[in-house]
Image (cartoon, rainbow, N blue to C red; front, side, top):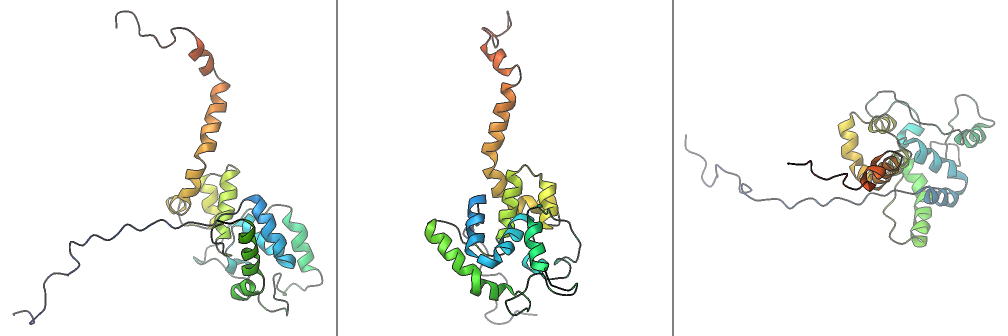
Length: 212
């Protein structure tokens, strides 16, 4: 059967090379920036600390299982206990720990409009060039802090609730790249504790054997 008039058997896009996708700049906060942002968020400073130090998704501070419906474990620094204890004072077992000023669900959008976005704006004015920060990107800060503390890929995977170590490396590859200086420093420190330095200092240590 003949093809329709004007129809082409090939896509007009065949052979066209797409431009390379530029890597986006991810927002990470140092420990000092975390403290600043938390202070700027006032009464909700504990929300910032919780997200920055546990890697929780916003939805996981409300209720229910993660997006993949699998339970997971997260690190919980002891210093968070005091703030969460204060949050629960006078509440019943069925009350929300994190709630809006009216006692309703603490929605992401409302939290950003009421507190977070203004705090980030002020932080950016204090520190020009700071990458864009969102509540969700605080998960990446958690990963960054964990990696800087020596966490393995497997540990970061469990903390973020990612499906595999390969996905973790893909999501956090730039974080591990930034840590190469620390790796080099660790190698250098280790070498100084061994006979490497002594061996290099010996005359003829790397001389070729006679007759080679």
